[in-house]
Amino acid sequence: MTGTRTSRFSAVARELVERSLLLPVGAVAGLAWANVSPASYEHFADALRFAVNDVGMVFFFALAAKEVVEATAPGGALSPVRRAALPIVAALGGMIAPAAIYLAIVAAAHEPALARGWAIPCATDIAFSYLTAQVVLGRRHHAIPFLLLLAIADDAFGLAILAVFYPIASLRPVEFLALIGVALGVSYALRRLRVRSFWPYVTIGGVVSWVAFWRGGLHPALALVPIVPFLPHAARDPGLFVDAPAAAHDPLSELEHRLKTPVAFVLFAFGLVNAGVPIEKVGLGTWAVLAAVLVGKPLGIVGFTAVGRRAGLRLPADLGSSELIVIGCAAAIGFTVALFFATAAFPDGVLLAQTKIGALLSVGGAALAAAAARALRVGRFAP
Image (cartoon, rainbow, N blue to C red; front, side, top):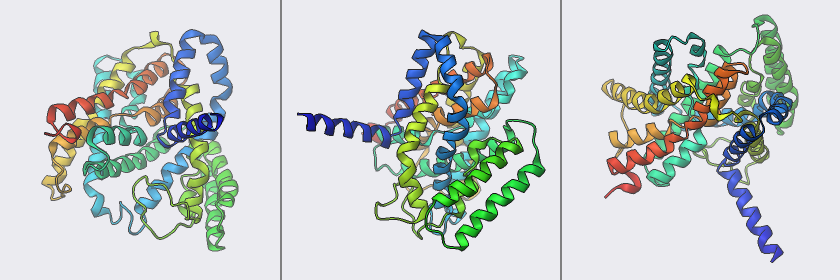
C-alpha cells in the first residue's frame, strides 16, 4: 500500500512539473495568503522577492533562450526565417495590437502613470497556451506547431522588450559593455576549448553576465540569455518544446535535463511571492490589461496573418481563419511572463497590484479559446 501511494505521489509530482502546473499552485497559494493575512504575506514575499525574481528566474529565461537557440539553429523550426515568417508576423501583431489597445484605454481614462505597463498584455505564456490549445483543438491538431512558432517568436521579442524598455536602475552602458564583454569572451573561450559541461558556462560566464546586467541597470534575470547560445548542442531539431532525449548529453541538452525540475519549483516560488494581491485592489490597470490581451491578441494575430498572406506568405495546409482565432485566444494567456513584466514595470503599490490581477486573469484566454472553438466548430468541437 505504501509503495502504491508513493508511486501515485511520484506520478502526480511528475505531472505537475511536466505541465508547469506548480506555477498556478503557487499563484493561488499567494493570492489566498495575501487576502487572509496581508501583513504576514508581505513580510514573507519581501524577504524572498529578490532571490526569486532576480536570481531564480535567471534559469527560467535560460530555458526560454534554449528553445530559441534550438529553433533558430540550422534545421530548426525557425530556420531559415522564411519557414517561420508568417508565425513571426503573427507574433508581432499579437504584441502590437494589445499594446495599442492598452495605451488607448489608459489615455482615454487620463491615467498616464499606467502607460509604463504597455508590455504586460503583449506576453504569451507558452506552457499554458500550448496546454490550452492541446485540450481545445486536440494534441495532434495542425494548428499546434503554428502556435508554438508564434509563441517562441513572442518570447524572443519579449526578452528584447524586457532588456530595452524595463531597466531596473539608471543605465550604465560602459560598465555593462565591459562586463558583458568579459562574460561573452569567457563563454567563447570555453566553447573553443570544447568544454562539454554546461556548468562552467553558467558559473563563470553566467555569473559575470549577471553582474553585468545588475551593474548596468538591466534586469539580471536575463543574465543567461546571451550565454546560452555559446553552449555546444547536437545538430538536430528535436521539435518545438520537445524534451531533449535522455541519451543526449551535449551541454545544451544537459542544461535542460538538470534545470527543468528546479525551474518548476522556481516558478512555484515566483507565483507564491508575486501573485499575492488583495482582491480589492482591482482597478483600471486590471481591466486595461485584461481587455488589451483578450481582445488584442486574437485581433492582432488574425489581422497581421491576413496582411502577411496578402504579402505572399503562406499558411500551413488546413489552417484557416477559424483555427487562427482559437490560436489567438489561447495565446492571450500571459500569466508567467505578463506577471514578470508587471513586476518590472511598476514598483510596489496600487498600479502594480492592479496590473498583476490583470495578468493573473489572463488565464481567461483558455475559456475564450474553448468558447471560440465551440462556436466555430473546430478542433474537438468539429462535426
